[in-house]
Structure formats: structure tokens, C-alpha cells
Image (cartoon, rainbow, N blue to C red; front, side, top):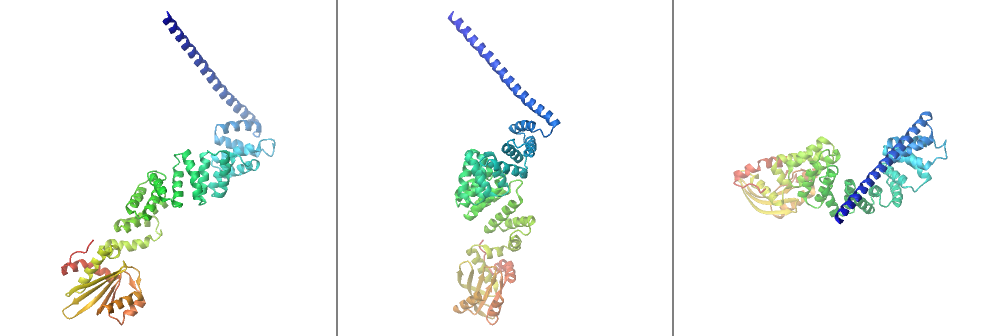
Length: 459
């Protein structure tokens, strides 16, 4: 019996609950219909009045409030524009509210000039309003008036310290005025509130970079490399940091990832290619560098020193020995110079007796030459710089020749000689070998070395 009573009680409770739920849903639906009907009635009545009198401010206020609350910005903007024009006729209207809402709606509709006028009018009535200051801060930022933007964002922040867009605008404005440390805290807080803001994350990395906190900057730039929007810029920064830290392999990876992106901005595309080419040149990847430099030239023929670089390295790319002469490590350079000395005099026996090096600027090689009709000690100087060799270097070479009692000197350069240097050697036993003659020697040095029984130059 008690079990039957329990079942009946449970059924009764469930029935009452269902009845309450149905009643509640009915009231909710009824309330919703009532509100919808009330909105529709307001708009219908207002439109009737406006059909008779387009300047009926009460009707405009009624529908303007609805459009603004519903964020129907185009209609709200039109309505509050009409109300703003009526303020002089009806001074009892709330001038602050009308200009504030007109300004905000105009911002949403991308009408910056109208928005600015309305918001400034609102601010003249109430200077500490959040919406007015936030919207004016946004407009001043767009106009690149960053100091004014900071003032407005600061006022807005006082009213709402946790508003992420305000913190974002303030941080970005401070960054634009090069107040990097001040910008850091606001941008960090904005990112905490809106973690998906990749642009702010990129700007945060820029702040770290400008504040010489490159490790933190590098982490963020590296994280952003795959991003379809910020990725190319992040790759450019990350690669630059790795170049400055003498990490060429990582820099190449950064720049190559950047170039794999789609729809890269033209200026970023050119700089990515240019900087990657510079790294390849340092790595003696001349062929790859020349291809990239030609790409840059096709995009912007007057970009930096790209024309001069192409002129210089295109020739190097075609002459491997010239690459070695100018760019190879010292040991490879010396090996090539030895080959030149050994093959310089045909049908002569040559014995190298001494080699001296001045940093990476030149190498002096002393050789005993025994030909069929003459024999002598000859000093060779191989300059590596591509500039003009002046009289001072030639004088120094001449002094070295006399110190070792050599009978003759051969001064070699991949560049040229100044007029003073040429005049100095006119009455002395010094032959000058400039770029054109050196190129011819380098083109034939391997064949000559083979005939002389010398091995290939170290590479």
C-alpha cells in the first residue's frame, strides 16, 4: 500500500512540474511577443509621424533608441544625424546623448569625419564619458595623432579598466610614440583579455625587440611565423634577429618560411628576398643569392644596392676561382694563390720559399724562379679587396721586396690601382695585375696547375 502511495505522489509531483513549465514557457513567449509587438508598434507609430513630419524629434528619438540598442548602425546613424541637425531648433533635447550616439554610429559606419565632429560636440558637454573617449581615441589613432589618442584612451580606461580594446588602443598608441616599456604592460593585459589578438601579440614582440629584450621578442615572432596575416612580418623580424646573432641557418629558415606565405605585402616580399640573398652571400651560396637579387630587381629596380650586387656577384657566380679569391676562408685563398704562383711563369721551375699573410687583406708569397734564360727571386702580393689599391700599399710592398732581397714584385688585385700607385711603380720592378688580367689568370689557373703537376685548389 505504501509503495502505491509513493508512486502516486511522484506522479503528482511530475505532473505539477510539467504544468509549471508549460505555464512558464507561455509567459516567456507571451512576454517576448509583447516586447516584439511593443517595438513594432513604436516603429510603426514613429514612421507614421515621420511621414507627416520628417523633423518630428520625438518620433526620431523613439526609433533612434531602438536602432542604437539593436546595433542597427546604418539606421541609427541616419536617425541621430537628423536629431543632431534639430538641436538648435529644440535645445531641450539631450545634446550630449544625441551627439554621442551619432558619433559612435558614424564610427561603426566608417564615417570618420562626421564621427569626429559629433564626438567632439559630445565631449564639450561631458568630457569623461567612456564611449566618447574610447571612440575619439580610436579616431585619433587612425589619424596618427598618437599623443591625443593616448589622452582619450587614458580617460576611457579610468571608466573601464578591463576594457580590452581600450587597453589595446592605449598600448598601440604608446608603441607608436616609442614609449615601448609603457606600451608593454597595456598590450600584455589586452592580450590576456583577448588572447586571439595576433596583431597585438606582434606589436608586443616589437616592444620587446625595441627594448633590447630580443629573447622574448624572438619567441613571439617564431610563434607567429605560420600565421597567414602576421606571419611574413614575423618571419622578417625573426630572421633579422638570427642574422644579428650570427645564426645564418636559422635566419634562412625564417626567411624561407616567410616567402612561402600567400598574399605577402610587396614591401615585405622584397625585403624577405633581399635579406635572404644577403645571408646566402655570407654562406657563399652565390647562385641562390643572385636568383633572389634578380627577383628583387624585377620588383623594384632601384631597391637599395641590388643592381651593384647583381653586377658583382653574377660574375662571381660564373667564376668559381674568383669566388675563392674574394670570399673563401684564408686557407683556400692561400692554396689558390700558390697555384697562381706555380703557373705564372711558363716553362720555368718555381719554388715557393715563404708565405706571409696580413689578416685577411693580402698574402705575400716569395718564390725562386729558374727559367731557361734567367733566374730570380720574385715576390707576389695578392690583395683581396675590390677597391682601388693606392700608393701606400704599393710602397709597403716595395719595402717588403727590398727586405727579402727579391729582384721583382708582382702586385695583384681584383679591383684597380690609383694613378699615384701606377706612377710609383713606373721606375721600379713591380708589375701591376688588376681585375681584367686577374680574371684571365683565374680562368686558366686550373689548366696551368694541371700541366705543372699541381693538385686542385682546396675548396
